[in-house]
Length: 390
Image (cartoon, rainbow, N blue to C red):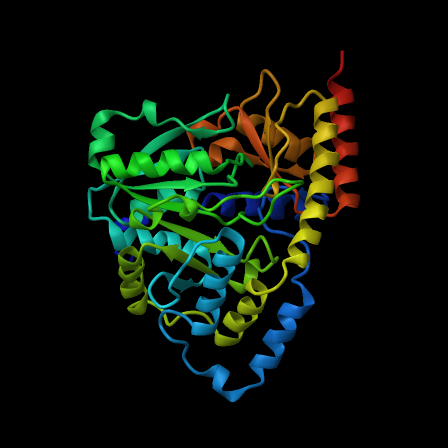
């Protein structure tokens, strides 16, 4: 009697169960190497927390933030978009501060759809999309991703009814969980699609700055007229190793952003001001710290991807994100192979089905441990492989 039907019908966040499994094994004395969670292990750059410490000493910093976030942070985001993508944004109407992009995404769904509205979400995709739609009383429509062409959307597999009735669509590149990346043409096609069918586009760009080699992730707002139809969510969690700081932003269409701002003003009072000011310093930086981090993640990726290939575990070499999306060996499901790795090798990965039915046949491997631990992962995988050899 104390729990609403909405919460009764809401499944527990999928990673909570994985955490319990990990803790149960650790209590038995098993050394579990966690490659399941998508949280960078590298430290936040020192210049960022220096600003936090400095601002936290000021009395004025401990007052309420403006509901839409400090102007200093919003203007830093706008300047970042101009410098990085040559996109002009009005800090007052086209940028909104978020308490992490996950919070913003879930609240955005509630701000723009009505009960019963259909929302197109990528399959496989970040679980928060599906749960956010469920909380808002909407209906999820799964958008298959093309496994043969870099996990780009297959709009042709959507029914005409779903295209006509959908109110909102999510995309996410660099992609979680598949680690796939796209060029600007993918966004041009997306804007053309939502324009034709009168759908809102929300692009989750949490890994936008986590890229390797010469690849540079574009912004959906670089497409002509994109601000008429789209918003883009950003986060400092992955690019600046600030997961626990809970700071992000949404940019783009001012009417959609105002709708979200109205909702949030009745729920929260934005993030702690010193965090916003430290985040502003990060967004205005030369991104040298991001580039250094990316080299570390790239080194880890190349080491592990090569080892997986030698062991017969197939995966595409990522150009971005902090993940490897690997095919499970023949004879295994996503869950059975993930369980085998955990129980027999003490290696925790995420089964692809945690991200939807389209994830069956895959596991997601996070690059969030140091190379010495990856060396141990590789040793354990080789031992496991040798036990199975005829």
